[in-house]
Image 1 (cartoon, rainbow, N blue to C red):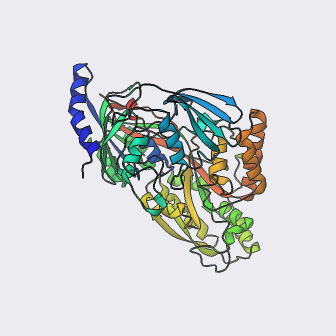
Image 2 (tube, one colour):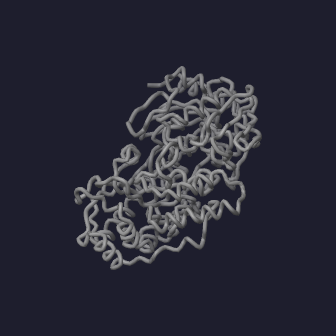
Image 3 (tube, helix red, strand yellow):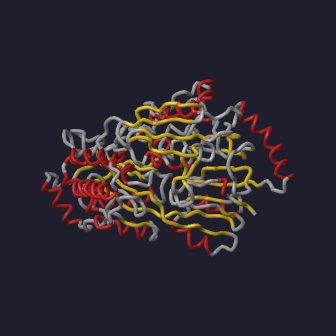
Length: 527
């Protein structure tokens, strides 16, 4: 079914192309592929990099990030903290949504309320915001429950939607991906960004076209983007080599050097801020999918430490990641504010120590548990999970591995239907508090939304709250260090590594690579 918005975009495309040619700009199509699809066009439905990255080309936040990931004006032109718990934002004038409707403060108030809805995965982003109030059509104030000194950085992944469009299309509330529900915003879009959605075939092909009314600067020459999910690594690489696509990500680590030798191709590589980790259910009295009945081994710190020390991360780095990963003891990467180098030393890999810990905890013969893992989201995620399963088997922990597409993986783990899982996280604020608050704090209210194993520590929660309001940077960093130390010593999660970015391109194609792994198509140039 072709929706009215799609038909309008299709009619505008030839007009736009003619206008570009008339001004000397040649229309270009960028054909790009990813190992997985964006699960929805709704920017509030899932807090996941692929989805937020893709929809960022269609929707925009009040505050964006520049090439160095520093905050920069987007739909807000200026902001200031007018009192400890009030931030004021001046909104950009003359901006239109793709359907032609004017952007105003009403859309900002609506979008923040929508993001706070139980069906939204962005609830953690707005958890400390008590109210967003309209002062006039181009001024809003955000009232927070406590002082939030990094609020502008905290909202860079919260995109603004049209109040009128959402209400007219029965999409005033985001749908819960955990329940597999869709609404109009799942397959259609109406943002203010540099590209508009022309067509959407989930899992097959999504087409964007240049927004002729875009308010901002478009650095590249791309007027159409054809985005295709290609899950198979070899097929994705073959498509790039044959010229079927211009850009792909990620490049399989085993193919990077070979692609660099191809005179028609190039590989963009760089550090990423994402940390890959394992989470364990440390709350339930009895594990799901486990051979141990009536008990939860993961509630015992010794068992969590045994899992940690049974995993040889250097072997994973060398054999699976081909050196394209940095082993870590922390849940944040270097480059994230609050990173403590002195705490980033992992306890040694020691299978014998792991066995003793299990025996001391009452599991001399180990136990069996299911490990849930995506196979189309991270670099070599399936192979990493297989390696972890093999390493744990050597100490008696038998793993039933369930690797699946993120389309089914996320609804499962986000409903906490898991005992043991692999996940990755990039703090959208590029500040440690984002990870502490979303991944590690006790699930309650808006915090701990992605703490799927429900690890909990009262002092850690107290520190997380204080870090969120502290304005003295030295005191704040000291509290971050204390919180990280508590979590590390209690083995709340098992951090594995920070992976490296690798994008493959045709030689005639260029694009800005940012450490958050978000591709901005307005920066793409096809010669």
